[in-house]
Length: 290
Length: 311
Image 1 (spheres, rainbow over the protein chains, first blue to last red):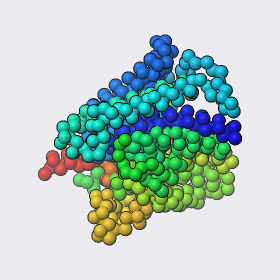
Image 2 (cartoon, rainbow over the protein chains, first blue to last red; image 1 turned 90 degrees about the vertical axis):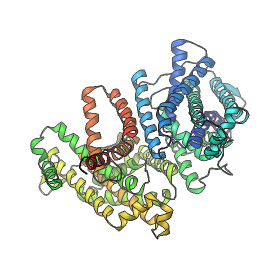
Image 3 (tube, each protein chain N blue to C red; image 1 turned 30 degrees about the horizontal axis):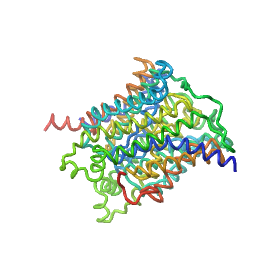
């Protein structure tokens, strides 16, 4: 029982960051109809940006996470503007191949800059775990979960309370009508991609100190993001949030009770089962943003 | 003119080990041939039925492991093991095809990736069968009567036979009624269905043939490198196949082979010029540029250029 509680807690902490990754991807996938294989690379970018800010510039943790978000969003905006906007009329296969190219180039660029050795990201939190009755948790993980929850809440506010968010929802529902109503689709796409990439970078900056930063860390992250999107349904924000938490818990339980070697198989199996049995996602009544 | 070029090409291919005796270049050519079979296999799905499988490395890996396990654990000789690898991979192609081909577009892509991911993890974790990450060393080289095909110059002919066979199967399939059904499905699925094309039947057929060919490539790879590890399932292999097909020209017969030659030779040429990391970086950038400027691939672009030049 205690073991179960501990697994659930670990799963929720992990799931918070998966939710961040998933929200970013579900917006990009749903709104831009883009299978973004480079999503994990923005996660890696976030981890290395946090490493640069913390270990090299010596700023505090909050500032490092903000710097990572800024770096991810800026590079995301650039990527959308230069590569994706000219290809907007092309098929989904074409843009997907371009994103595979971006993924390979970014990953090897990171390898070139930072080297292949995994980097441990320093953090200011004590390493002694907090003991709460039957379970214990590292203070860093508490911070990661709280910040992830804060960023998820901020995403909701952005989508539901701002003018930009309304324009994004309109674009998702019907791009042509939205354009006729004066929404500048190009800008919405840039903003969406920058926002989604920023969230991925935030997830990287948060999980980087928990694990390690290395150039290929984004591969599995991208896969998990896809898994969350599929669980939650395309463009479904609450779905992605729940899906992220669910994936985190499922992985912890799978690793704890089945075999730790198959931890990463949980995501794959979920993708296969959900797509074959309930393709619109677990939580979807219909595909829409918000 | 065309006939002359073709005859010359065949002559060059048949005599290659005699004028290109350097083992390094022969190795590059053999790998290009193995990737040529893989690219032909992926092209059958991607180019002719329009379904992008990003799990193709799984079929390559299953072929390699089947062949390696049969020869190592059950002491089969290479030829039946090779046949069995093709048959078994085709069977998995049928199974995965039946399940995954209910989906289209991005969702089909994701399911194929996931299947490949699961199979790859099994190859790492099922220690008793696959020896895990350590891999299976000592896979035997094939023998033909009294002669061993272990030398690169001899193995080259085996690979050449594999490429030719795969090419002929593709050409025969594409030129037949079945190929026309594939194209109809690619261009407009509801319309094809309305004139009586059995969608699932033809798509699964394409998946089975494609998987079998990838299994052949895997088996050829296993008996060539004589070592199989979970690395055969790397996503990089799938990406390489996609790049070869798209760059060469999807939906053409020659495209995948052109792409395979080019994109096996290109990293080697880049390797001579720069360090390893720059090589992969340049590879990614080249892929982006290629999709940007030649979205339909080299062979169709060449064909269009020739038509423009000689009206």
